[in-house]
Length: 391
Ligand SMILES: [Zn+2]
Image (cartoon, rainbow, N blue to C red; front, side, top):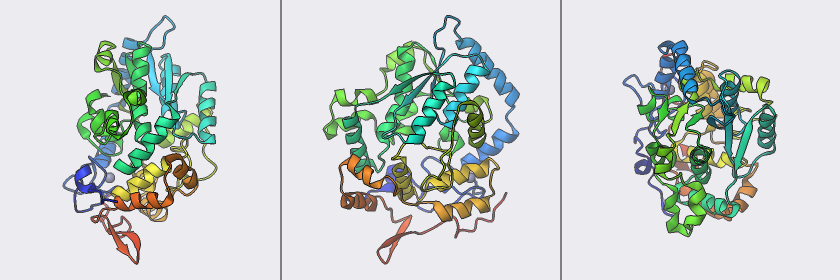
């Protein structure tokens, strides 16, 4: 299989550098590092703690709710929510603290886990109207398999739906306000252009979420317009005439995923997994899809950034663990192969183990990996680098 050019595809720096405060490297697409070697997410975490007036932000939220609240029984805010801790926190606060009437919407996981299903049911039972968008299973499988081969990310069809389905529901139910949890670009490292505004442009979707490839790209790969329609955004004119606004709750309320977890245990019937998620140490994040381990594993192959790196980086920023602890967790868990559903996943994608291995090999970039005795090893790791922590 042809070697992929990861550097130019994602516009990555050739020299790998690790943030001096957390565990993330400069290989995360769109992240930036300052002159002191600190990443944009760490700088934002400090800014958010020290410079944002959260009482003022809450007033902005109340104003926003006042502008959108309806008194005729109709839904007045769309909350994308799988029943997990982040959407659960956002929906519960909007409904019970700010008097809104949210319609919660979930784009179905590729293959839901038992615990994901249970948490979603518990969330609905906690008092929420909910719509589940389930696309054609055959088409989803096909896009998953094609995405794995062409862009090294099996999660692309899910990402399309997760981004576009809430917009469809906003247009259909004539609800202009869509409220996401956090802005991942700002909280976890990425394009900082939206760091100081509460909302985002629909125009950013292709670049930020779809790796530059819109659903229409797959027309060239044997899928029809009918197949792809559910994955596409509503017509731009429909989004505009609905006066759709996409906001982030994390702009208005201090965002802390671990606190959201405790909040949802108490308020939405959320339960953590009894076992840790493969590739990381946590038990409470991203529990609902059997195959999301492959999305994270491919991230590890392409960028040298696995699930434990992402989890530890934000827990360091949130003051839950130290950098030293984070580095140890990355060393122990990052890049662990998602073995549990591997066989099912191959069957789901209709590929052999040999084809899978060839795809994985094609995404190993020479600036991150070297081969030693036939096995791939990271050239640079966060545990071997000595960033002289500035914490
Ligand atoms: Zn950092």
